[in-house]
Image (cartoon, rainbow, N blue to C red; front, side):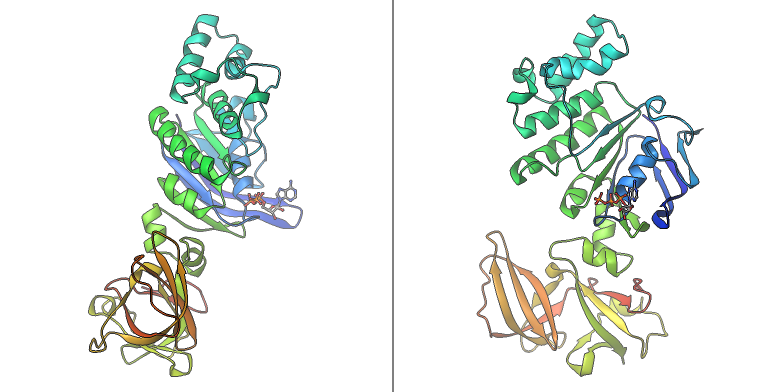
Length: 361
Ligand code: ATP
């Protein structure tokens, strides 16, 4: 196991800056997920850590060793891609044993290590099968087994679950988390799927256009997004983002179309120079609550669309000129066109500067 330190990493392809001045420390045994849309530089970052790309600027350390000029094979990493390639003419057992035999490890130790991996991954029953006879989920387990059997210092995974169907993906996600906590190897995992990131990571690195937007625990990036990009990218549906301005202690919609009072706790955090600034109000779909006509904190809205999803409903509401999405329990099924009142739960209001896109609370 190693701690991985990335300092001021920049990687360019011609004029394109794929990764810009990235700083990240992954602690020994930590599970860190690089998350962002296609083309944001996740894979390039991972490939630089693996030694498959050479940084234009910056340093990469495994513990205290600078690894910039070390080849991938001497970094003692394991890399698993979306498109795993098993040796088709070797059995599952021999596929997993392959990297150990390549290192000329005595056969007795190979047997012990392969058997313990087969057990850990719960694939003992398919050890004699040919890869051609495996389901995609089984094949991916074998690929993981072959990667971890070498006991790498760092485990690098690039969208390893994205070619599995949805059910297998969920199952493998749980398996991966269990596996990683069992073997405790420092892991860096790339995905564009925010749900996958939130369920797997100790910490998430949210990236966009080659630049780190925020690094934090799943709870931190979900509850306290640093900017509008993170607010919108994390969560499904993403955070409701509504243009507004601050006037006399209230958040007022465009053309005065709504006026949200601000709770006392949030008021204490509001900077003094907000008057007249172009702002964006952010509220998670589960942070609106319906309230009575008499509640002074409530504001009027109209039901626009209702999506019953089984475990919850997503109710779209028209507030002034804006449409916001609200999560409700399955039994709460209002009629389209119904007039209701909503308020924001205490402490759940987020506020962004529309020019800089930064969270200002
Ligand atoms: P994806 O999930 O689509 O792979 P990503 O976030 O992993 O996206 P990268 O693969 O790191 O993104 O790519 C970042 C940018 O660098 C993209 O614009 C991509 O087209 C470009 N890029 C990556 N590799 C190369 C290369 N070898 N040559 C030229 N451009 C590249």
